[in-house]
Length: 258
Image (cartoon, rainbow, N blue to C red; front, side, top):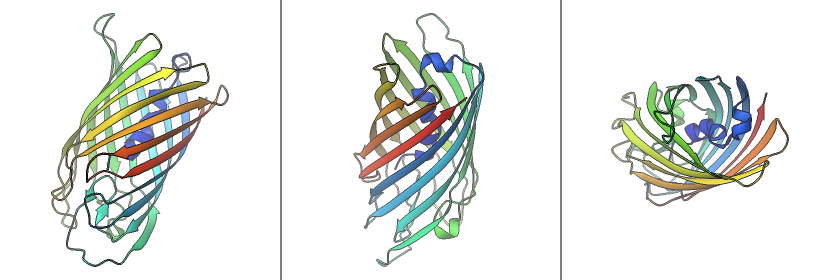
């Protein structure tokens, strides 16, 4: 499946109204819940429940993000979050639930000026995954990972187009051999319907992140409701089109800005 912690981290930035983002610096606290189910290229279903909490600080050019989470995975133990099936050594059909702390993600971004009036805005981004999830319970790889990403956005009338391209660099581990570095692409569109409501969708493609994993193609429509000048609520659903993707995913997020 796709890298949902990164989506949870970036979603408020993608949906932030222009009038609000113009207030610098901006602080955002996000509370979320994510549920996904699928086979993820394995022989049986795995269910994932993910509860992220993140903080974002956005200055005129520099931005900082920090995310931690609680995580619960129900399955036979051969599927890793954000990876898919990583081993066929684990045999049998005993379904268990493993729960605990998820991995921690820290990110830094830098906004560049457009090269021309017609050119899109561009952000450079570095994310580091700190291995706080327990690898012995298949909640994470137990290794330090990082990613490099370039994001683009362009407003044309009431429509905003955005895109991102990046590459994940994964730490090797004897516990889960066969992990790979992989690239990813995201394409999306957003429309501001009113001062309080915006809608949109984005497509997410990722190369196989492990020898046993498959590439993923997923689409996520969403709606963002501004409840007040400081509070907003975001809801999105997802559907995967490949064996490595989740059959479906649901996410909700409550954000507070000051």
